Picture (spheres, rainbow, N blue to C red):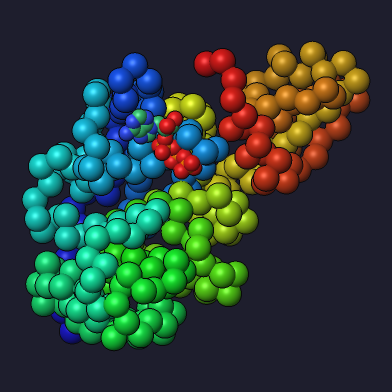
Length: 289
Ligand SMILES: Nc1ncnc2c1ncn2[C@@H]1O[C@H](COP(=O)(O)OP(=O)(O)OP(=O)(O)O)[C@@H](O)[C@H]1O
């Protein structure tokens, strides 16, 4: 059995990334890192800048300012051996549609040199007829193929841009399980954007919330779960002086991040655990920056 050498250094370092399209700023001074073995959720409303960020991460888009390093080197001049340790599942699969499934898998696989046989669990999940022509596959089958193509060489850093949008609930649930076991088995880092919040909540160890091109919250899933609370009070203004980050507001109170059991709260404050979807709606709601 071949021993995989550990990937060098940090999988991802994004520093002060700004991307404009004409006069429109799609990403505004975004910085974060992805540590080895982390499973990171990229969360935001439509148009928040998730795909733009992924485009910059993969080196498809050139930033106007700032940088993206993958395994310690600029993504814009990433050596072939390091690029081969990344994988990407696009929102929609295009190109090579006249190939048969089997031919396309072999063709793409050849770029990675001598690959072992496809992991039987991945192969079974994808459930594809290798003789079918790619253009004749259903939307969900194309998505399974894109996932198989991105994962078959077992990348150390896998990026997925809304990978489950066309999958039926069975395929989606099985895929999220497969992704979780893959991350554990390979020790891979994963960055995934999706609007299926329950999937992200279950799978991810870290959450990146993007709002109007700004990274507004970068937090471990565990810290988010234990330290984000609705705090309500008959005079909600008294809550504004607490040493918490205010993620959102409602008539009776605030969505506070930084809550702990021993935080001294004004008398009469009620504390409740937010639903993940409600928290998402609050954090990503458009507002003045
Ligand atoms: N090539 C482009 N030219 C002009 N504007 C663009 C371009 N690409 C993206 N944008 C704009 O940048 C913003 C962010 O788009 P992006 O595709 O990154 O959003 P997203 O968060 O991935 O959204 P969704 O959830 O709908 O996929 C949007 O307002 C979009 O219209």
